[in-house]
Length: 115
Length: 115
Image 1 (cartoon, helix red, strand yellow):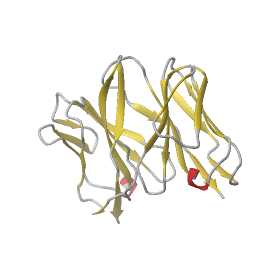
Image 2 (image 1 turned 180 degrees about the horizontal axis):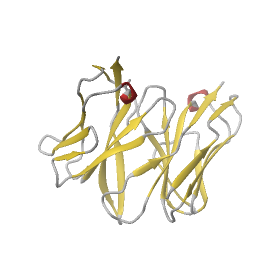
Image 3 (image 1 turned 120 degrees about the vertical axis):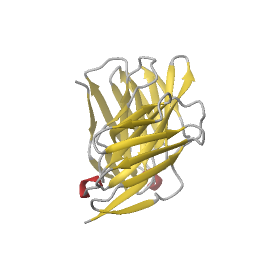
């Protein structure tokens, strides 16, 4: 079966420090991969998605970047964190079979607090 | 559309009563819909889905209704339990070309179950 791993679960970082969140998927190949951010008590904001190695699409211009160095690895980074980067970050994957009814599966999330 | 900018609406339900959570979607071309449940501090979990060629689908204690005429989706939870307390998101799936589909999430509804 497929599983998605996301770490760390919580992170407290000072303003101006770098960030690296990692996500890996097991049990599938060629998945679509996604990074979402969720502010406290709010909805899901799509940040980045990737349809293949090295292919990154950004949905929102911001202080963050994403990379996909391997088929089942997706990394969210920042060179210098801002206070506004605080939030709950979710990685997700979806099978890329081209069929209509493909569910999105989420990781357990990373709670990032920038102080 | 991105699910940001507004605080989540809240629905309070007495334990044992039925809950109805509503969602309006935006794209008449959307062909697949999903409901997710997100408990505090966790990633969203799949509950139930429905294709656009259906107007009703039932799961265990949950029913999804789809009204394509008014672009409305609802999730009904029978005999609501304290464990149902969570934020519920609807998502619509739209074909975005080149064999790719994109999921767009609604703003979410917070369900609070009163014991």
